[in-house]
Each structure stands twice: as C-alpha cells, then as structure tokens.
Image: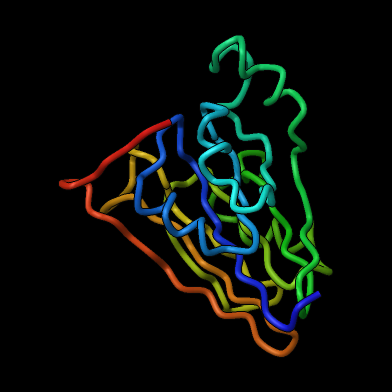
Length: 178
C-alpha cells in the first residue's frame, strides 16, 4: 500500500454525472459512490483503473432503474468499507439512518471503528469533523437538488492525516452524460 491514496467520493448521480467530476476520477486511486447511482453507465465513467466501490441507494431499486441495470444494482451492498492508509472509510447511502437530525450520531454508532463515514441521500455537501469518526457527504454529483451545483469530495489519505477537499461545479455550464 502506498503512503498516500486519493479517493473521489460521489453520490446521488441519479443517472447523470457532471463531466468535471468524471475528469476528477481520472486522477484518483479509488472512486467511492454512496448510492442513488441511477444508471450503470455512471459507474463505467468513474472507473480509473477499475477501482470503484459503490453501495445501494434507495433510488437504485429495480422499480426505479432500467431492467438492464437491475441485476447490477441488486448485487450492490448496503454498506462497504475501504481500507486506506491511516484507517477505514465506511460507505453507506444513509437513507436508513433516520431521523435526519440524528443521522451523524447513528452513523458514528454503526461504524465506530472507521476513521470516516461517507454517506449520500441528503444531496448536501459537508465534512463533519466535530467527533470521530468523521462524517462526510459529497453532495449530489448529478443534476438533481445540487444546492449550488454538482459536487464531490476528494480524500487524500495518509497514515497520519486525512484531508478532504470539496469540489463544486456550475450548473449553468454543466455537461452531463450517463
């Protein structure tokens, strides 16, 4: 394992991926998708060296995606863990951790050994560093409910430090493809 790894964290694409976010994936060691993928082509566009981890979101149900994608989405786990330098990144969509006002508390209880927990569902980009594990949400990387434009997080994970940077793109000049 190298001394530092980069992880692009995305969520809530709902079948559309902003081109700027797809370009960021090209330089990442890993891509993590926190659910509500919406179209298998989104995952294909995010594959830098075939290292993509994705979890099931509430909108990835067979009744909401095309038949050709339903087998893939049925095979996605509800949660996943990625071992990185300095700890584990837990990944979940977050729709089963309610009420929303207690979601961070519930995620910390569910993944106490993780260094950070990445979740989606709310479409709001945030990094909560007030307690361990850290709780992060990349916001929506697609077109729907982006709260200021499509967004994602980049994690730089080293054994002694994890650094998250937020990236937001304009909806006005947005280019999307599945």
